[in-house]
Image (tube, rainbow, N blue to C red; front, side):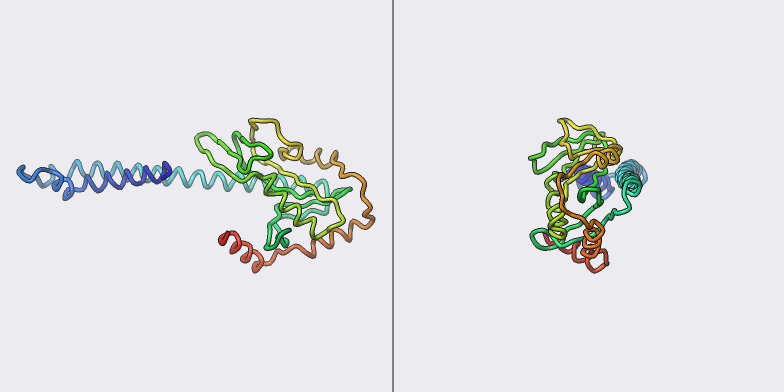
Length: 242
């Protein structure tokens, strides 16, 4: 049971025990039970305090949710602006058939002079702990701590899905953090901050490539991209099933 649920249970228990009828039941049968204003007054004070505590927890949870939403929205906007500045051939938030079946969602894909970058965006703040071969990483933002799937491993499956659509084209795995984060260990070369994205794309070299018609390559990827609502429903159903 997490701390939020434990606090909620404690508050409910306090409310129940403080209710006049229950307070009276807890006294010994041999002792007289006092009733009236003198008995209910302290109980209502306790209940009011408990409800205030509960309201505080709800407000804090809502504030964290709103903050995460605003941070993610800001991060997406900044990443989209950078990609739009460096290439006219960029897509975001689309679905393609998975490399091993099913469906997979691509955060961003951008066509560069030598291939396609498959980008996964992470909108965390604070400290990030995790090595390239660890299945989960950890984010600590103030007192808030959470684990998340290793984005390098997660995005590798997405990269292979894109590669399956355009099999003769170089496709690279790139993870971009949009928030202010610090890493506990040296980062992998393909884990960057959004402020480094433009220079990363400019300097990134895929190596020798025999592709001559890049426009055709991009059209093939756009044709395979699923953006309709039915595909999104199928993808959400796949996530809930797994």
